[in-house]
Image (cartoon, rainbow, N blue to C red; front, side, top):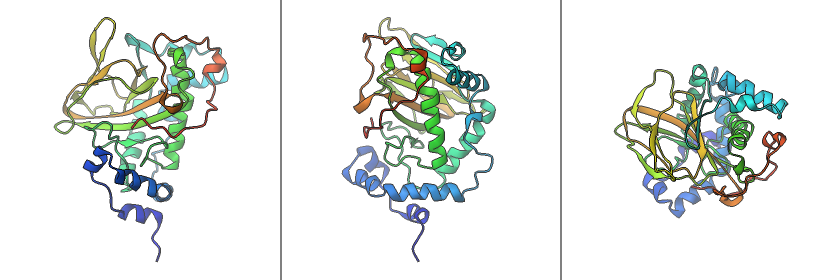
Length: 303
């Protein structure tokens, strides 16, 4: 009897973590040769899995942000309510309540179910410390390909992140057509820190997915102002997001207790092009901010 795609995916021999971290040719072959199998397996899993109460839709967003964004899509000329929700907490770094903390159990529950599906998921091995994350974008090998998740992810990137990025950072327009994303889960005594770096993105959105009461110690995000050399550690509560140019240097401090869960989402241009400081800032009309990109997705993935 022929096994279902889901059964085949669950039983397949997988590359070792060491091989994935080394990015060996055999690892690339593994993902490339099994793309269709895993795609079908995720479809089967979503149909067969009990996901009652774990719906991924607009109710996950903080009500104030959701209402302001929906209003801006209807009337792009009146998007000040969106901008007013974002507070500049460090030069070029903004913070806002992005997801509703009371709704986060649905998203975290879905992610936990997906992790337990036993379908191969590629961790973001560009971040060697992270052992429990997953690639989210369809451009990435071994991404979380469940159709329901991909619909939610696409809406997050195209209806929320891109227009908000253009509102706060007009210079990214033209360098924000491509999406990329991954999840992280860092645990004390397992994942320690991430040294200062900048991102290969025009803009980065970092969303805390910890549940209310799910505390951790340490693991703040340190930002460095390249002009003044000011350094500041920022922490953010459940459902809160930080957004900044990818070029802003930052680091993750050691986590000393508990665990931290996040989505890290990037926008950049075709073939990895990013907005550069000093470039001419386009004079965007509101309709240009609140519009969908018509650029075809390329095959470039930063890692």
